[in-house]
Each structure stands twice: as structure tokens, then as C-alpha cells.
Image (cartoon, rainbow over all chains, first blue to last red; front, side):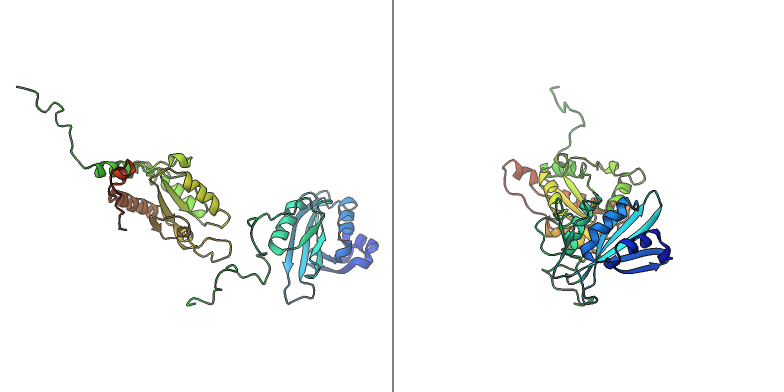
Length: 162
Length: 171
């Protein structure tokens, strides 16, 4: 159960004020934390709890469904302990930036560039924050829910006979 | 007696167009260039079962040695400049085959990142429908291209400064 998870126990002890909630679904533990403490929490998880592999770093756009529009998701794996942990943190559209995790895991470099490219979330202190998938001169961030599917320069699709 | 018929029965008279077009259509060398799943069918067409070699079609790994490019797959906007560069590096005369639904029209990928048909950027000679087209379809497309090449008028003459090239109408 989530309450007995080794990471959750330690996080609740050390970062009680920063934890928003803890959820377990089909054996997957997700800890939602506040953005301010994200680097301390991630560093603690890597250094003290051996979550030494950042499997993936991505974002979700909750446009119109949540007060804080974006949710950043860190998928962690501990190679020595063979267990996984998911850390989530909300990012508001008004303050669309978060400290970079490159200082914790170097693999975060390209993953954060992808999130920057497709969602437009900036990462503070990132060593090389450029677009990675779209062309350099691209305007907009395609994975945002308000980005038109067929691109901004085309009439949107309205069904087969449009 | 005199010298008559010194070359025996080895002379064939023909027009320059017929000779040039015949040699061109019998040695279409396509660029080795695949973009998506259509490229797998293209490889299958080149392999022994369908055997493109019997048409003189030999895939070349350099655009400088190619005279045909088969756009085999989805063309993304990021890939388009690369395709344009490869196409521009090919020497004249050169032909373009749009293979499959994506290359013809964008296919199912009606999205911001995909070019809605390679004919937005390159002059396409043959469109092959299918998703992906079977090797037989690609073979048929290449044969259509051969037919088109045979209909070419004065393309060699215009290249050496003799008259104008007469554009062929689609078959």
C-alpha cells in the first residue's frame, strides 16, 4: 500500500509541508508535490533513496479542467531497489516555468527540451533550452490543448464534408 | 563486287528520341530513400521475388547517381528540407514517384506536422495509391513512369541546345 511505500514514508517525514497528495493505483504510487520544493525532493529521492534512473519526464495539459493548467510528471526507477515512483507537480499557466532537473539527472536535458518544445514550459537553469522536435522557427507549442490540430494556418476539420 | 553492307544485319535505324528514351527508361536508378512503412514495400519490390533489377532499376545510395526519387512514406515538415536538398542534388533528367497515401495527400496524417502531399514541393510524375501499396502497385507505377519517359519528345536535343523540349501530357 502507498502508506508503506519506502519513498512515501520518507517523503512524508521530510517534506510533509510540500506534499499535496499520495495516490496508489494498481500498485503504482504517485506523489503530487508543490513546485517550490521539487528540486529538493528529486535530489533527496536520487541521493538518499537511490532513484537513480529518470525513466521519463513529461507534462499534461489540463486546460479548463484544473486550476493550474499543466502537470509535470517525473517517472523514476531505482535500479538497486527495482521499484518505481511517479512524482507530479502542478505548474500554473501564469508562471509557466519550473527549475530544471538536469542538475539531478543529466538525462533530463533532452526530456525537458521536449516538454519545452511541445508545451511551452520553460526550465530555469537548463543548460541548452532549445526546441528538439519541431523546427527552430516554429511558432507555438503543438501539444497544448488549444493548439489547432491541423496547424494555425489551416481551416479546422469539421467532418467529412467540410 | 564493291563494299556493300559491311556491317551485315547489325544496323537498326531509329529516331534519337526513341533511342534516348529507351535507354533512360531501361535504367531508372532510384535514390535509396525511405521515409516510413512504404519503404518496407519498396525494399520488398527491390528484393528477389519482384526483382526490380530486371527492369534496369537499381537503387543508388547517392543522389548524384540517381534519376528518380520514390517518396516512400509520410513527409513531415521537418523532413521536407532534407528531401528538397536530395532532389536538388539529383542531375537532370529526374522523376518523382509519390508512393502511398501519405506521399500523395498526407494520408491519415491530417495534422500540423505533416506535409499534405509531396506535390506541394516537388513535381510528381506518378502517384501510387495504397497504404502501403503492394510491390505489384509500385512495379505498375514504375512501368507507368517508363511509359511516360518513352513519350518524351526532344529532351536530349534540348539539353544539347537543339530546339525546345516538348512536354508530355499525362498518360
